[in-house]
Image 1 (cartoon, rainbow, N blue to C red):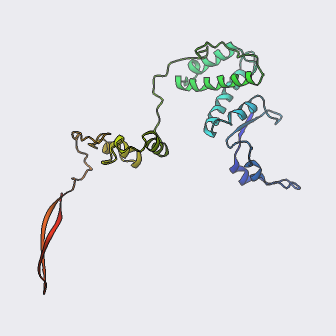
Image 2 (image 1 turned 180 degrees about the horizontal axis):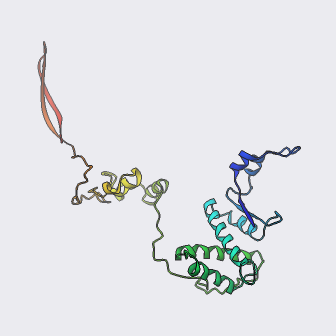
Image 3 (image 1 turned 30 degrees about the vertical axis):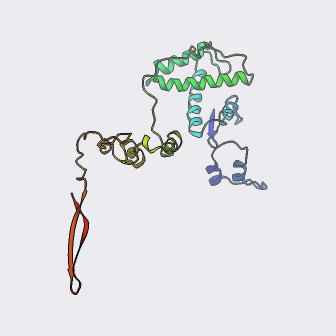
Length: 260
């Protein structure tokens, strides 16, 4: 089974209309209601749409972005290949609970690089989504495996011990600052520029940011040390200056003198 992804850019670069066909292919694939960019589609050996994967991913494309669709595509192909290599070959619609449990054991135990709990959780999410869709589409009367009321089923495996943490993008940070924190400067110490805001918005090195001695609420902290790349802070103090010019006499005043 072959698979491809919808790509407006490839249509723009490589499409050539057949003789006698007057079609603006770029406008066609970008028209309202067209298949979204990144949506996968599958073809069998006869170059016909392979169901039910085409319909399932067309439904997923309504709520997922291209990167998520790509990840789910390779997980689905991996499952289809496994089911096709069983002693009694089967497919997604005909698979039984024992077939899917065997797939879980293969992924988590018998492969050269077994799946970690987080990776298997993603594969299991695809399987659950597919069979939920198959029941709604009336391809199946019910899931082929038992599921408890709390959502746990026979495909559940392992406990994820690592935190699922990712960094905020600059756009997300601005949204958090302006909406979540309501633009309140007291919550993020904008008067002195605390470490969290500096490291988020400027890309300053973490070692330098750790030397910032103002906390999130503008309170001064004890110095933690001095970074070798830091220059002495500049301070200013009042100074008296005097100069004279021919014909004007002496003129004096007050200014500010810089001292390192």
